[in-house]
Structures are given as structure tokens and as C-alpha cells.
Length: 236
Image 1 (tube, one colour):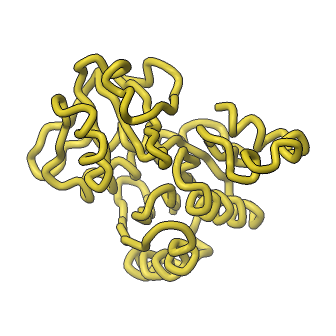
Image 2 (cartoon, rainbow, N blue to C red):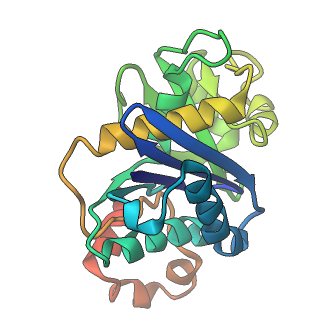
């Protein structure tokens, strides 16, 4: 069974994938360390639902961001911890995950194609953003929400339900909504994991940071001593 997981927001997404079958779970666990308390129990419950055990896992595909720093690290650390047991690991971005979700048909609603903008909460009044069609059409970025209209230029956009009202204040037109966002996200997680697992495994996984951490902002001299993988993650 391939394990897929996303911990980049306050919603924990999990999936177990075996052939054409998938068992999924979506848990509202709150920001920050809430995932650390709920991830393993949720995984145990999902394994029991699928009739499997940890020994049945064949690999792990994890969302590597961008997202909340603490919650993102919980998912990546869990995937890499399982990787230490010999399981192959793969990473996919939060944008690729949502793009797959938007492509899915959920409860009779046709999937959404592009071009469109995927907008995620960057905190501090900023939005993480990337433009997608069949694939990403430009590198991901981070800008103040108030300036999004200059970048989006009237094209359709999607943001998670909890974040969309913030974006809508700057972009009152063009919002894409889903009939069942939770179901779409779980379908997207399965699709993103399957796609990622078609490529070569990644070891170690590199978190995808679009902003500096608080430590780097407050202690800039220490940033020069970050491991190379983290410096690359900040620059991606």
C-alpha cells in the first residue's frame, strides 16, 4: 500500500492506495502541532479500515509545501521516518496536490481545467500563488494579498474555503468553488500520490518553503549555517 499524506494546513489528509482502490481520511486537527497528536492515530485507523498493517506499506508520498512551517515539518518528518525503515519516499507540492483536486470530478461536478491560479495562505497578509493549466505555467511565488489583482489579471482562481474570503476581498471576481471541497481534496491527494510515485524516489525529501523561517528573519547570520537542502527549500 502506498501511503499519501498532507499536513501543510490545519486539515490533515491521508490516503492508502492499493491498485485501483483507495482509502482516505480528512481530519480537522488545528494549526501547528495538532497534527503531531492526530497523524499516527488517524493512520492506524485508516490501516484498520483498509485491513492492513504498517508492514503492508510499500512507499510514502508526502506533500512538501508550501504551508505552515511546523505542520509541514511534521508531515515531511513522518515520511522520512518511514523512509528509514526502507520505504521509498516521494514529494509533491501543495500546488500540484490542489491542481489534481481541481481536475477531479466530484459528485457529478466536472473537473476544473486551466488556466487558473491556485492561492494558498502565506500568512502575514501574503498569499502563496502559482498559475496552472495542464501543468504549472510559472514558478510559485509569494506576494501580499492586496497586490494579487496585478498578477491574476482577471483569470479564474481557487483558494481553500477557509482562506477564500480573505482572497475575495482583493479578487471579488473569478472565484472557483467546488461542490464538495473535502471530497475533491482527498481525490486530489490520491491522484497526486499516484503521479509522484511514477517517478524516482526522493531521499531526502526537501520541504518547499516560499518564505524565510522566523529564525532566519530574526537571526540572519545563522541562516548561512543551514544545511544545503534547507537553503534550497527556502529558494524554491
